[in-house]
Image 1 (cartoon, rainbow, N blue to C red):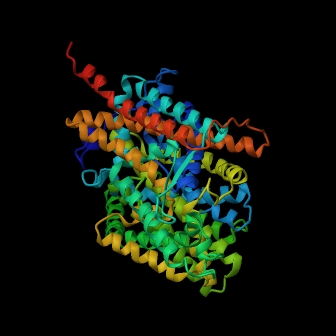
Image 2 (tube, rainbow, N blue to C red; image 1 turned 45 degrees about the vertical axis):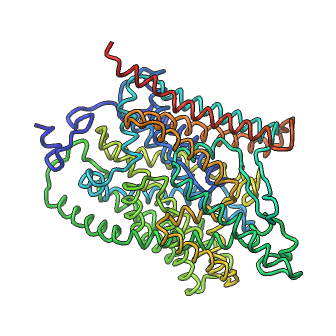
Image 3 (cartoon, helix red, strand yellow; image 1 turned 180 degrees about the vertical axis):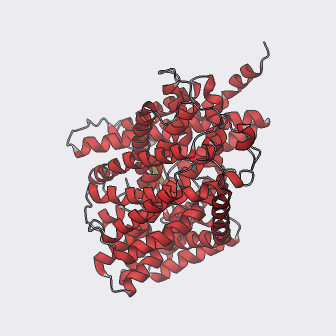
Length: 636
């Protein structure tokens, strides 16, 4: 009878039905979830500062969780593993919200304290969870057939099929080891360079290069060849079209042309990139983000309308809720949102005032509704969080300037509002995926929502230390840590407040974004490629090419999916291993502990060989999944 009641509205039966209870929000699940939230938060912070992108942690977390809880502690509850991956994604989201915005404070030489960073991301994280609660029934339950939530669905499949053992965990661990060793040998002991570059002959300042990082290879494999190819297209547009063009037309002048401080004739490719291309890229990313926002407006309107209707229906029904239908009570959600907004309005920690707090409440809820639906279609990794954050910052900076809140105080306040909203969007998008996983496997929603808040607290208290350590070791804004999204936020805020942006370059980038959109490409992805050095896009494209080869030579759909999933697990390990070793190297640098350097060569050949070896290993690990599939199908 309870099964019928549970599925009266949708006809869907989860893996663990509502009338069955298993251990879920347990102490061991919370401890493991906290550890993984901190680990993946630090890894994504490093990756976000490096290339301006983060990757989903849910599937690797689910695999590691099963390997530990089932393999070591012999615990059999799939719902415990679901709680662990839910908490882990909080770290990923907090890392994204922090590194997309807050490094701008370092670029302003303000040196924010750990307490300030923690306060900003914690308030944003709590808002993201609270504001998603009333949307769960609408997006996860009522639109179960129309919103696939790709990472959430994939994670549910991993959890359900992972009952067979820890083979997948070994894949992640293998990738982790390879990525960590390569990072230690390259950037730690300096055995080889981690960047190769060449000038195109007879083509002045036309340069192509590649950062030989396993993490970038893994990112490319995960996002696939289409997105990776569009990102590389943006990089090539900048480095073999725009930079040589600027070099050609500026070769005859001995005067510096704003915003560069030296004559173009005296600038190499990197000088032109820093002096001009970064502004063109900023304009492209900003407008591409706004285009993405405009395209999602119909979704926003429908989300708000359907959410209001769903709330009325739930209030009128008054029936007792099954375990799998229980959210945090709406009264608690309302009190939580109000408390956070009042705290933001009157606390001296951020000093954004009532106007800033109201902006967070309004834009937070509107964009959370968009983000939670959009990730249901394109996934968390492709969600335009930065575009919605840019829209928030543009409007808020304009409001602050009108109300007389200018100067550094106004810029920091605008950035803070953007950081809180950005974190809320990232957390809301990730918990949407988690709640989809929970819906499929039979998790209890309120326990997942509480678990997400625990993960927010754990990673939020640590992320400030990670940012400070990385800044002191490498320097935010340097070639080692480009912090592209944070630099973009800083550029927009300064331009709005001070009116001294090179608007012609910004508009040129905006025009490029519009043209790319009319070509039918993802303008935001191409714009990010324009903004970043081609050295970042190239290894990502190599990873995408490996994924394409797997797809091209694997005709059977089931086998193709198995190989892709295998490759994603190994690629996730590459990312986590390199990222965490990068954080470890930064800690040693800050602590003043010398790392002995043993350079073998300076010509990049060793670096290229190592990178190609890792590439072949990634291909091999994915391709060899055929034997495993054959074994599972063998009736004998």
